[in-house]
Image (tube, rainbow, N blue to C red):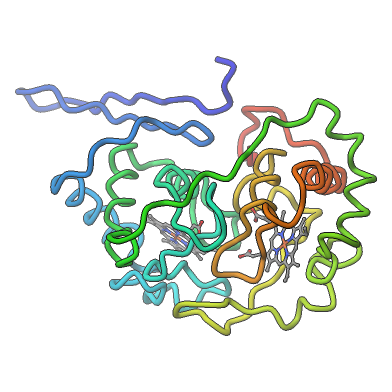
Length: 273
Ligand code: HEC
Ligand code: HEC
């Protein structure tokens, strides 16, 4: 199989006679399976998963103030705001369910607290997405944002890195937060805080751009381009889809890739794609 993500089909054991147990299908990021229609039964599955696997951190009300969540250095997302950092949509708009599917399957780097839920079936992940959306009234009145244009990765990406360094220091002013060398220690870094929800005013650190394996939305060029384009909602990281051209955003992507060793080959155990 050439795809990094494998769709693993586990036939649940049918120790008991009767109807065969339903198949548990587990699709791993970056693949995303077809989404089922939200039915009361799917919401029930989601509520069960949430209460078993998410509530301790994200809280009974979904506000990120769960019993364990309160003690994490990086606070669990407050779902009541409808704001998510990993989206394919413009800053300020609701994500697509497929964006949330990616975050739940991929998880964020160890040390952040948000695990990769690779043991849940696809149906359980879709269910918990339907359930966590009930915490924000925005999902009843707003639609997900229009997908930000994500053009294919340029073939000559690596050659764009020097141009990207210039944008980093001038047009994008990325260094103000991320630091001259991109280590996350820019002059504005110490004062950065979450801008909304229950965590408003709590400190948030700019990413160390030399650790693309820690990026929350993935480390592939297309993931980095997307993060720069859409911004990270609820944090001070702006979206640059409107203020920087596609070429400038690819050059920044190339610059960030140049700060990092190449990603390990597909299938390396424990490696982040
Ligand atoms: C051990 C604590 C912990 C558990 C358990 C946990 N999360 Fe999280 N989750 C976090 C933290 C911390 C963040 C915020 C990370 C950040 O902002 O970098 C987060 C963020 C998220 C996000 C936001 C992604 C984005 O783009 O903003 C989603 C969605 C999410 N969690 C869903 C879930 C679901 C669904 C479950 C249960 C199946 C779950 N989490 C269980 C700690 C946890
Ligand atoms: C006002 C401060 C600020 C500016 C300006 C800024 N960033 Fe960020 N950036 C942040 C913060 C804060 C985070 C981490 C947020 C988090 O982890 O929740 C971040 C995260 C990132 C990430 C990691 C994305 C991921 O998936 O985890 C990348 C890549 C990035 N920034 C690139 C850039 C580039 C390129 C520019 C300039 C075009 C830029 N940033 C400008 C504050 C800033």
